[in-house]
Amino acid sequence: MSSQPRLLEVRKNVLKQNDLIARSLRDRFGAQGTCVVSLVSSPGAGKTAFLEKTLTLLHPTCRVAALVGDLATENDAIRLARSQAPVKQITTGTLCHLEAAMVERALAEWNPGPLDFLFIENVGNLVCPSSYDLGENLRLVLLSVTEGEDKPLKYPTIFNSADVAIVTKIDLAAAVEFDESAVSANIQAVRPGMRQFSVSAKTGAGIDAWLQFLTGEVRQAAAN
Image 1 (cartoon, rainbow, N blue to C red):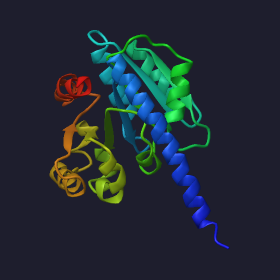
Image 2: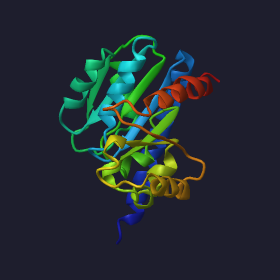
Image 3: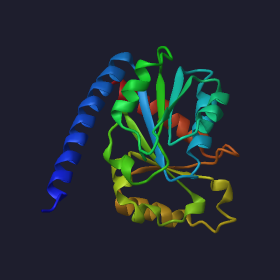
């Protein structure tokens, strides 16, 4: 007898429970006036560098904090703490993604105070995180110029579940012969109309446009 129907049923139940918790978190964040932004990417795409830059620049004028998911280490949390923003690590063990229940537990153990923005950095993975709502207002999918232009075509589900695409490490674009028009075409082929930003956490290129979007359109939409 095949176990496939049973496995599908278990998965459906897990996702249903996750969605219930995510809905509760979203209501809670909304009542607190907190805009929640999650970040997904493959390992090494530059999520942590991008988030550190974002936190550092927002911290003087906004109340910001970050939850960071990783399989085993606290390296990313230690790095993000350099921004002076409150940071908490979520260690997932063997699990390759964050779930809403993990976010809920982390918040029960941690009180960063009233927040304008809470960032949730997911585990480096472009497959599993696409299925799990974390109660966020905005989901970013990041890809670096070193990964090639065809990432959106290879992983369409995560691009379809995200709101904004961030192309990172553009300071290396010339060196790796990255074709920005090609990646833009591929993003739009998968998710027509998707907002896109090209940035470099190292040089600061593109960061101002990203922050203006975040503190303007995104924050206003979250407030409504």
